[in-house]
Image (cartoon, rainbow, N blue to C red; front, top):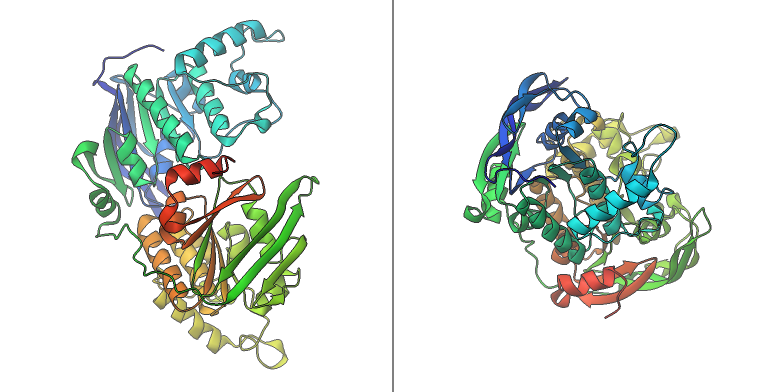
Length: 507
């Protein structure tokens, strides 16, 4: 990899502006990343980070603004232009073809030889030499679908660097990694920039930002709030810059006071549509007044577990709610009183074209008191309930008539959290409750989940965010390949212990 002059500007953005209907995504943004450094880019959800990086990578065209690479102005109208300028991007959702081998994925679109005759021997030699330089060890002839997600991410990085990228953009790169895999990624990034390259690191995990970056640029409401040297900042300062107010970063909760068992899962097993085993003999309990966290890398059965409990999947085994066997039917499960914050709010939590008022009774819309004589909606009562959710859960804008698709991610999530908690269930199943939510809304949602626990609710928390699981949970179960690998009390659940269990290594 070619080295550049350490400390000189690698990539500079000047006055980048992008306006969409109803929103100014980027408002005269100027920033730079230097050769030999990791620049972290942080901001709340909707702050404009993704739009800005899509502009840099040629996926979106700015209304105005200039881009400079190594001091020279460049025109980037498509990803091919970005790649030609040495810019590579690793997306949060991998752009890999699962049945293709590692080698085939790496060279796809940049095959040596070209035309009808691809020189695979040359490709193998080049990729092998690159892996040696990067200190990567990947099985080139293994289909990508057979690799764990940590290695799949390395394939994505290898793809970018095979195309001679020396400016690397990583979007939420640790979302699917164990703590050990994240540390390995950080070590690679340090080696990469030490060779004279540059990295833009986008993350909402501020502790990681402090750990891996040299400088941090904060964006709020489409504008640059400031850029600070990492060594001269702190988590509270970055949070304050992101949100514009003081943010309590640590969940404030008293010790749990567990009561009787409200949810019991016994010998639960489940097969997928492909007849592969997704859950294998899972058993655990949730008591009133406690939060039981489920940790694990996504794709290890957490989604299927939640869908089984909430009646969305058929399974073998038994699930009891308040001592009674739950029916395997989503409507019946809801009628029994169990509440569910789904992991995908748009697909399962909201009807995007419905108003706040309509979404506030979703799932209970057909039942009294929401419906009155002859099944007609009790409009006055529903409006009152919606107004209470908007006020109590700080939904902004404070409207019951706005369509759900018009809200930011955090405010849309607050509608769901408000609806599910307002039902006063015995059990709340919260799946990824703060996914895609900014730091201010995370604080609010966490407080409400803890308050629900303190009022005697049993909470099953499923989250890919290890910090969230550790902060909220009273007990933590770790899933790996559809099995419970172990259980840890919150005070003994170190990152190292959890990371080993998440990788399938029993303690």
